[in-house]
Length: 116
Image 1 (cartoon, rainbow, N blue to C red):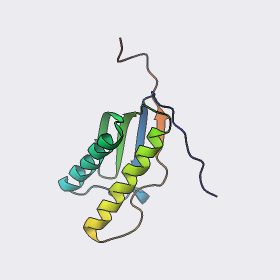
Image 2 (image 1 turned 30 degrees about the vertical axis):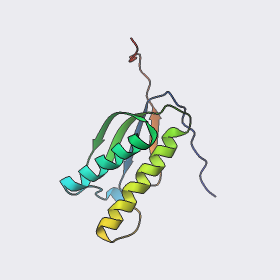
Image 3 (image 1 turned 90 degrees about the horizontal axis):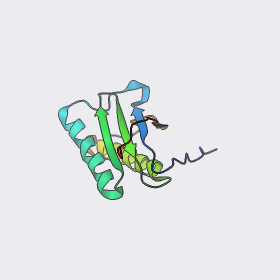
């Protein structure tokens, strides 16, 4: 049975992370990190999702994202992980899963507001 789509509300900041399957390295060299940064920039250009911060490590990554519309977070993360995986395999002539299927997105709550 397929998983239920997780609807993330727009206008809320989310901490999203993902890691390599079996803690496999997602990024081995500087070019790998740069390629992921290009995919992240493309995601912003395509959707306008607000990227507040990100951290790429060898076997996982963290993003702090602020979607404008309901459902935008799921759409962006699906596109981003799929695009990164497809480009990785195309570059290396390989196939298979690179990252865990389930991406963790937790709502961030704070008293701080960018409007104060």
